[in-house]
Length: 210
Image (tube, rainbow, N blue to C red; front, side):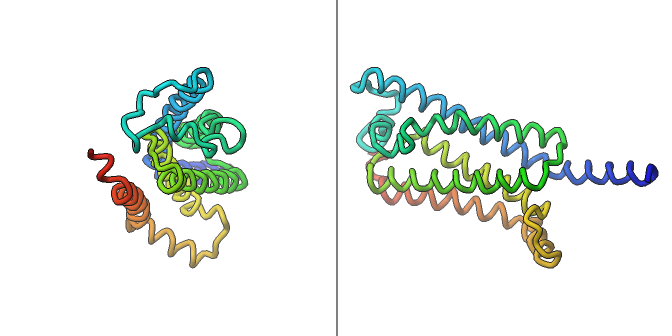
């Protein structure tokens, strides 16, 4: 038993090193999202104190953080949505730092993280759709949170799939690994960014430029 343990530990470390770039992307993205959440939280407090305050990113009728912040969608749970980012992004940053330290997370932990951030991604997309089609205004800081959420979810998904956290069959898991190794994962989230940018451009491109 003592003879095989070092080999097993070495192989685990080598396997985890593969995800270092992924964890770096997770750390950078969650850090940007935390910064955006801090700014949005400050703005929410500022508006609570003085509802007529003009925010720094109130540029025109379309680029208006104030208009978004005053909508009911921005306090869906009874408090500013940005407070959720203040609570959750430090957790993601901790996961990323631990991952860079070659920590192997339990399956149940990664499953919860995958589901939790998946729900966060759906929430971010819903908020973006509300900005585009209901509120008719865009908040640059909110857009940064959306982009960061896409990136973080992509990184978690990559690790979950590569590590077969959901216990897929060997054949299906190998197909997914081959798919990701060929770079198709990057293609998918790059296309997601492109769709978001095009949706904003076709909806408000002229107003933003003018």
